[in-house]
Structure formats: structure tokens, C-alpha cells
Length: 239
Image 1 (cartoon, rainbow, N blue to C red):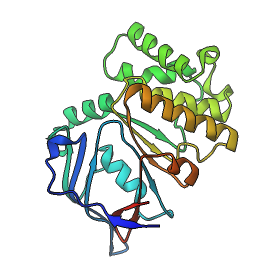
Image 2 (image 1 turned 135 degrees about the vertical axis):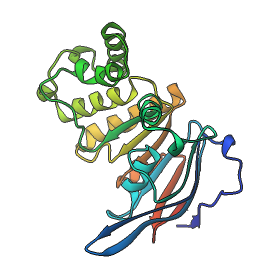
Image 3 (image 1 turned 30 degrees about the vertical axis):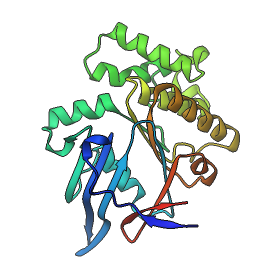
Image 4 (image 1 turned 120 degrees about the vertical axis):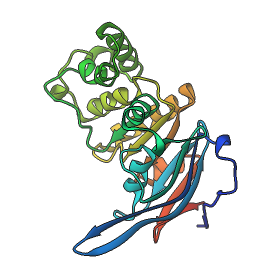
């Protein structure tokens, strides 16, 4: 396996969907500072699919959360289509995150007492869409992910694979340009994992949706256009 450092700092940030420059992130515990990410430089183009692989605890999820603006770096820049998103005020940053980025996690974080369509509608309602428009958008994406017959089922009554499809639909209700997924099939059996993998790549092609996926699943990673890992805080591209 060949590993090379990802350093594209001299490229023009406006040419990329996302450009990360000189990013550092550390945590402190018991008086000890741990450098998790060190001088990360990374470019991501529209429609690309990226897998970030490696052992637990190396900073994969931290990197994903910073890409999704759920966390902030100690220093460095995160450019989205030429704008430094960490210069946005809180209102603009929340709007950017809600409209431009979809999130899927290993634990789906759905509300079990609500139906599939109610869970899927929530980001649209939070963003101020009318109930009718939110429901129309939610219904369309739920049908696309194969849940036409489960729209009004309570999530707690759905199978694990169906619940993850609802989580995916919720992430895509606004048709975001970026999907960030953290172990999206980590709790699923092989059959359901393969179905979610296939669905992810179909949606990537249909929506020209950029995907960054943190995964231990090397089979899923093998289908991505690029594969990366983090070693000693530095982002490295693998072949």
C-alpha cells in the first residue's frame, strides 16, 4: 500500500468545492494536550467520493465534524466554494450547515415515537419551509430510498436497515451538495450494509453529491474514488 501526504496548499481554493488549509485541532485532558489533527491540507471536488479509514481514535470523526462545521479547529481555514465558513456568524453558519451538508451517523438519532416522514421533515421545518412543502420533499426522498410503504410507520417499528434509510432520507431532504457519513453501516448486518452502500453510490451519481465517509468497512472504502487515513495527526492518501 502506498501512502502519500495530502498537501495541495498552493491550489486556488475557489477551484474546489471544499478546501482545508493548515488545519490544527487538539484536545486537553488531565492537563495533557493531545494534537489530533496537524497541518491538514485537503481539497475536495464536486461529486467526489472519499473514504477515511483507520483505527479508532486517530481523529477520523474529528476531521469529519470539522468538515461539517459541527466543531471548529484551533486554527486553519475551511473554504466552501471560495468562502471561509468559519468567518460566518452563527446564524449564517447554521443555515449553511442545514442547507448544504447532510449528516448520517452510525447511530441514526431518529425520534422513535415519530413516523418516518415526520423525522425526515424536521430539517425542512427547522429551516422555515411550510408543512406542506416539507412533507412533499420528505415523501419524495423516502420513496427514492425505498420506503414508499413505510412513510407513516413509527421509526421504532422499523427494522435497522429501514431506520438507516430514514436517516439517509433526512440527511438528503434538502438535496445537499455534501454528504458526511460516520460509520453509516456500522450497526447493520451484511445484507443491509450492502444495500445502503449501493444506495449511497446511486444517489452520488444521481445528485452529483460529494461524499466523505468514515468507515472501518474496507469493501465500502474500495469503491470510493479516494481513500485516506490519519497517521500522527496528518491526513494521508492511500492507494
